Image (tube, rainbow, N blue to C red; front, side, top):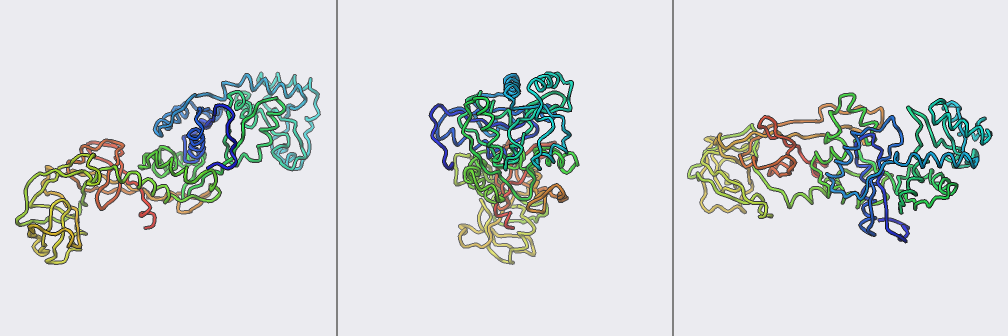
Length: 488
């Protein structure tokens, strides 16, 4: 998995550091599971650090949601910390840089500062004395000069433009340290062995090391991985918020979203997510990954361990079986896994089958009814003759059916989802597709009453489903997408 990762010389400590400004999504999972793989290889501790430096974006609700999602993913956290826990130490480090003439307060307007950094032109504030900067620092911390920021004095001519005196402290409703400044300090204070970061921070590696060197910190070993991209979705929290605020989606747990909640609600199990990330590895993120790979992994994991049930459409045909059986028998919920227990089969001389299936039958054809037996069908009369000792292997059509006893029938709702965006690589200008949620009602039997919310089943010859909720005695199942459906 990891290339050139040095062996640890002490106990391994890694950190997963999401900003509590939204819900976890598949991009976070890459960082999370790569850290987990280091722990699995070397042992050690996984620290959950809430990177709550910016008081504008963070909310306690998001912290709670992140903790809940990690619990859903069965992730064991050794310790929970907050970057804000270390604000006094970070503030002290900022003052140390000022005293070493390695940082200065600057009130250059943002657009002008951006232009000066691009051109390599020093700010007029760069040559302020240490005494001036210390006095301004006091006023800044007191909230009296909110138009100022604190910049590291590194180089205004470096080819790496991120080193051109980057801002390390800003003021919003109060002073707060920027990520580039806080990260190496907190990593050192927490004794992080390996600090994994997305490759968008690769050009900031020199800032991390400069801060560590100038403050005499024992900095972590930095390892950069490529970000994950998935087709037909947006991953950034800001773009997801926009979709919700504009009414395209109701919440962060919509199955059309690549959030952890959306993925789990759509029937992707935690082990499939983990296996998917492990197969991707630390690279391969520059291109778009294929949802088909994730859904194939998920199907391989759920298929051997879930029960099977029969269902038919509401648009169906009644068929009378002469010589049929009226009885209740038990059969395994899945013949390939007897440990799942049994279900009741309501044998009857009055049955229902899908209209589409009925149209496929040739007049006088012998067909097989799953878990029942063979029949010969008279289409015109909607009659059938039961075939004693019929051979299941000799028939072309093998159909689902249900008893026509209304006391045994249960209506359930099946919800399916299409891609939210038609474009493979949607951007901020992309408009979501309409009507990507579709609902149909089908019939099954009362075996379905044993299914609990969150459980996954297979409806034979129809697909995989997860029970989302039971509302007014109506069972509402979400379809679990598969590679086969993607190809169709």
